[in-house]
Amino acid sequence: MEREGRAVGAASGELVTIGEFARLSRLSAKALRRYDELGLLRPALVDPVNGYRYYDPAQAEEARLVAWLRRIGMPLSRIGRVVALDAGAAAVEVRAYWARVEAETAARRDLAMYLVDHLSAEGRAMARIPGSTGSTGSTGSTGNAGSAGGAESAGRAGAGLLAIRCAALTDTGVVRTANQDAAFAGSRLLAVADGFGEGGAEASAAAIEALKPSAWGSGGGAPSAADLLNALEDTADSASRAVREAVASCAAPDGSGTTLTAMLWTGSRLGLVHIGDSRAYLLRGGELFRITHDHSLVQSMIDDGSLSREEAASHPQRALLLKALVGEARSAQVAVASRPDVRLQEVLAGDRYLLCSDGLSAVVDEADLRAAVVAADGPEEAVRRLVGLAREAGGPDNVACAVADVVVEEQKQEQE
Image (cartoon, rainbow, N blue to C red; front, side):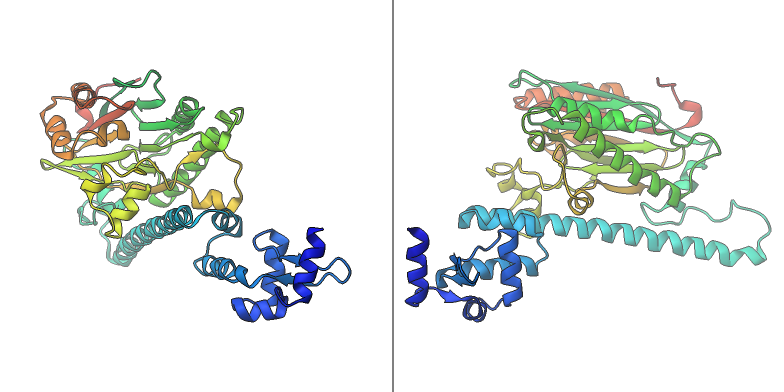
């Protein structure tokens, strides 16, 4: 009966042909047929005899939305979810998608700038080879922050090679009854992970465990910058696989996952792996610098000026992540887009690094974080002070933190 009614509607002019609808929506007939096949934009009627498609003119707005979303590069699978939402929810989804695009673009820009610096330094070094006297100690540490050249020089300066002394601590907090955060501190690895969903605890533990087998700096000396970047990419992929496997048995694997912020020590460089809203800070020269960028909706709104930092603290969607390690089975394209950021970090003797979950950073302001990190005599005291601050602030969430000091090797204390 419904099909007959629609056929009458088409015959009486209430519906329009695909050609007419193409002109109305400014989409080609080929695109409309493709969207029909994918379930993005179904015709109001398909004639059962000749297969002709007919559309309701009221569908033109939805068709234009599909076209606009395609124009900004949104994958067809995601467009299908957006067009099924009401206008407000669709707006949130589009903002989240574009914030992710901008975050990925920023990460690629940072890597491109690093490669420019690195290759420029190599070019200058090669240009000096014909007239070289064989000395490698005259190049100095003139590289920009984050460049491999500066880190290498720092690693060999002073009384000896650099090393790290570190400690980590997690706490359930005051409100929660279970702890889904994880933290690790060892001679080669510093990491925190903030799990969420049914399998959050398993996800955070798996992400960190996947980093431990990496033999950074072992064997034939410290790896080159290129080798280290490749190894960081491999490590990030291993963590992603480990999380998917850890939560595969959950009722809703795509609702479980974890953030991950980790620093891997080679003996001369730190490699940073980061995804989500856990954070890494650097204390240098008495100043505390945040060296990671949150992959969250509120951070994207801060970036584009639509939200202040004060407003972000109480925003109802402050926990919405744009990127995280999750348990869903994803296409290769989406998996690459959700890959953690990786980069190299310049190190200097005397640096102190703090990694923490948002159970600390969301409730303790950076001035208090700095005061606690500065005042602590060593990493063990620092992590105790920081967990104490989170609890004093109400401890609404689990807390994970890890602190590392960069020291000359003679001061190194062996870590298991």
